[in-house]
Length: 78
Image 1 (cartoon, rainbow, N blue to C red):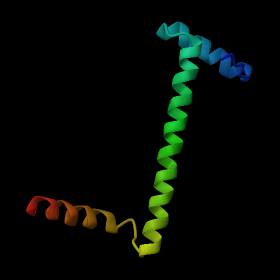
Image 2: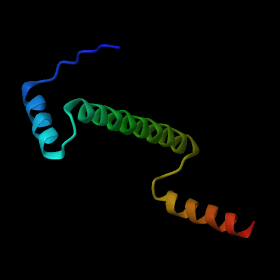
Image 3: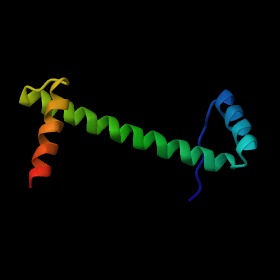
């Protein structure tokens, strides 16, 4: 599949410098960057889902340490 992506000149110049520095071609760098962006967004989405569930349950961020400890203790006692 052929594709063309337009990026700003400063970004392309930076990627070219990074490609020369690392020995990885520019396409490989853009592929890696895209994978990292998508993974980061997926984690952000999962975190948002977790926050919504916690809010529904009335949990606060400070409850997380206690809940993890309780869960680990339950796991150990099984």
